[in-house]
Image (cartoon, rainbow, N blue to C red; front, side, top):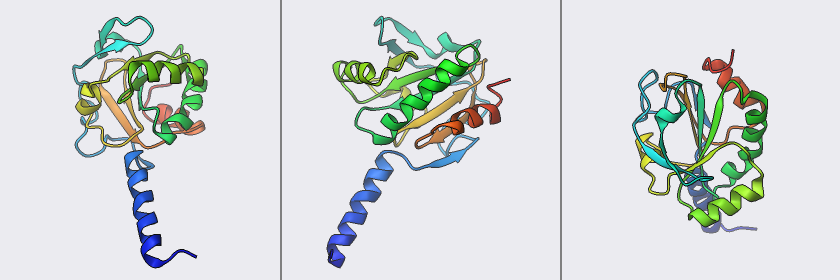
Length: 175
């Protein structure tokens, strides 16, 4: 049986881990400090994993886009990737799903992407410019953009299964 100080320490560690991976909070509006709904997504650049070519968020205008920020050390990020892959396969003609890797080395992230088998585009934000521009704090974070590149929603924490489709429909990204 754990003593009170040990139990308190264990609960504190679990709270820190949960905060680092993001809470399971949901709101159709971005969290406080994020870009307000209806505002243009911040201008940030990145590199595409497959080609190493540079890009920016305007590359995705013309089609609704879901940006899912992840890191290989985040259990919730790992757990939600197969569900985002399923939705990429199911709705890829209507909505772009883009994985945004932060905080991993390029080699580690590429190895991890290969292990997960995801086929949606992955971009790297190794200097955290994009994550910071969207006021990211914990992982994972999912940002929803309409076809005009405006922020229409945000989800902090793991987003799984049918909740991904429900959120895309709620925000008007799916017909």
